[in-house]
Image (cartoon, rainbow, N blue to C red):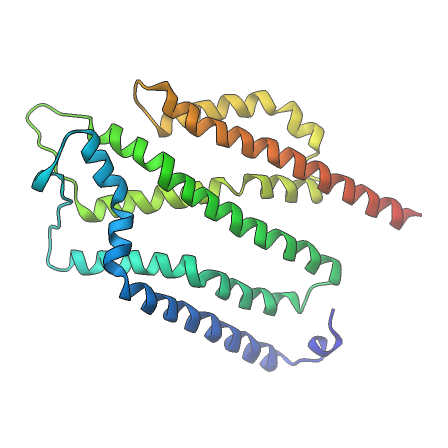
Length: 257
């Protein structure tokens, strides 16, 4: 722990936290302003999976458009898209500012672990979001758009589309944190690499079931496309857990010696 940080009063700590939060929030505000300048381009990017799904279903023209049911819905949709984009762009800056404040109270070895895990977490989250956008969303929206009810026309509300878009993409970003979670659990001793390996068959079964639930439909290729990355994440988690477990055992042996 830094001796200078230990001598700081509570008021000084609160002032330091306030300063770092202001820097992070200013970064988010700047990112939001920049995203607002490109709100139409971002909106077209976000609604791309919908247009692809409509095209695959042969729905073209006005019938393929998302429905705006109020005057204010379009404006709030722009705000939501720009806010989420700003969080993706400026969020790491806010996270870094919070980390700089928290790290002052950690020991050196704790800082080293976190500085390794945070970049890995961000990379895994971004990969998950990209995978969701390029793979999961097109498959899911195409299937859902093809579900027809007798006497019912297809009209998709803009707000509803954005909600499910954000839910699925961020859910994939969270799911892609699996290797990091497995590493942390191994480092603190709750699970061992051998334990993970013994549960491999169970996880594969759960991954297949989850993929079938997330991508319903008669086409098995969609389930395979989603299940394979989940299984690969588990295997990556085993490798990271093994490395973390060896490091922990080495540290324990050094401490005991």
